[in-house]
Length: 342
Image (cartoon, rainbow, N blue to C red; front, side, top):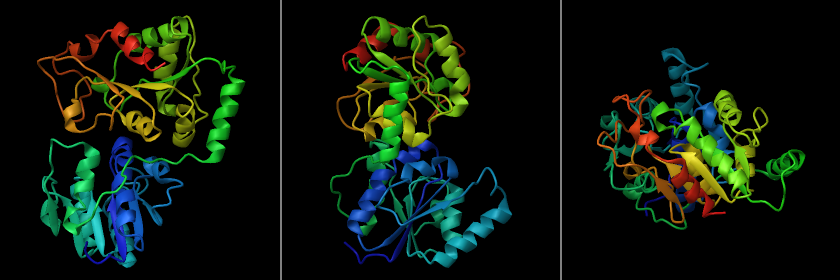
């Protein structure tokens, strides 16, 4: 392995799931360069991913679509990063914006994927291998540095107060401690990655009635309308902690569960980080893109439809109108998949 860089910057300003999948890379950097000062640059909405993470020394927040939007604020960020005098930048996000940030900040060594739009600004290009999981792809960015991999896994760190809050919330909600808990995350940033409202409601209802389980219906504050819509068509009601959670509190609740049901979205990887078995529904995207639940003891539900995939991230609406990739997934097969983990 090469001489340790004094200061390292990891730039990941993508979606929540992408940031969660960067945590093994951060851990690997720390293990290989234990004396280095490690910073992570990300957007405010994903900052909780690295809260309580002892592997990093500094978080740099960049609200690129909010308060820091625009070229003027971007140049202010460049000036700030340049003054930090980083020796090395690692860029898992294939963003031209991120590449320019590292380049203009005069970071002497910049490692990223060859397929990135800003790869011409890198000093080291690593092949973006489509046959790898995203975790392993990110770790491959360390290959130019001669790094080794040791005990790499997803990591998130709810604090003791988050777990205490979860216990109190479940107690106040009247959860029967003799029953198993199942968590359901029905939302996604992309409409074609969301299974049907009726499907989620049916599975949740059967988990309560037939599997004698308690069901937590989880999501962010912006998912409130969706969660309440699912609950409204159920006779037996799930537990919905709307307006009371943040990312780490949600994780604390998941830690109490036996299984998690989710679309192809960030909660899949958050749940894997806690060692929970996940049943994940794939519609417009494919597990082969590298975003399946990492490791074993998980279940993927999908249908072989002629038009899949319709995009890397999914679409706002089904291009073929019929939305068969999701509508053809039956509540019964999903219920049976979740039930086996109870």
